[in-house]
Image (spheres, rainbow, N blue to C red):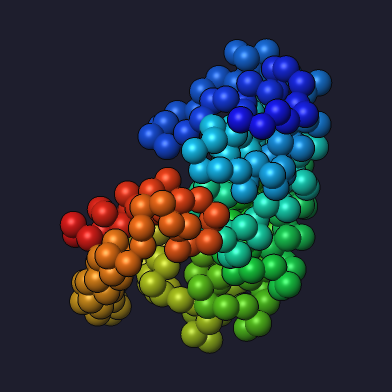
Length: 278
């Protein structure tokens, strides 16, 4: 492994390696990490050299370990810098960023609300980056009850622009509002559904939302999910065929099709094998 300019104990994160299969995060504080190491942890989380390291180098996993450590240290000053990673979801299909950073923001707490609210409202950012920002707001509201109202306000402020947003983004914002039991947002959500600006494949239609918010006991009309369920089987078949095609055409040591820069065998090979088996 190439020597990298990180002091101990931050440098130990370069050697921890693969995070897959770890249901729970390790206790990074047990390594001796503390508030004094936050600047170097932020630098590691954003280190482009590490993201493009050889897929067999343990250091390629270091940014993930770094942002987990920042979460455990409740490093509030990391909130703004970490949003600079969200673009990776759209540009590189980076599932680690998409799945973990919302949880990290949840640990960082209320200080991240204005940061994420500004990011979510900015239409120059990619769709899935904005979804992750919205998810982060939801995580903060759930983890910090005193910040729930502020998180709801940030989500509804963007949803007010539903006519100018993609229906998928509206759908996820609605779903995160439901996660926060945001009954106060119900009139706004209804207007968005009335204008057909919400993708119902995310969590259902307006009646589904009312039931989840406790505003309706049962449906008055047939669920659209019955039709969507028929289509989902077709979509699964398409995905399986595409996975089988990739297994035939991409070598194990070739760059992965997702653009991550990793070898196929260290990236999406396992997922494609599972898909192909159905």
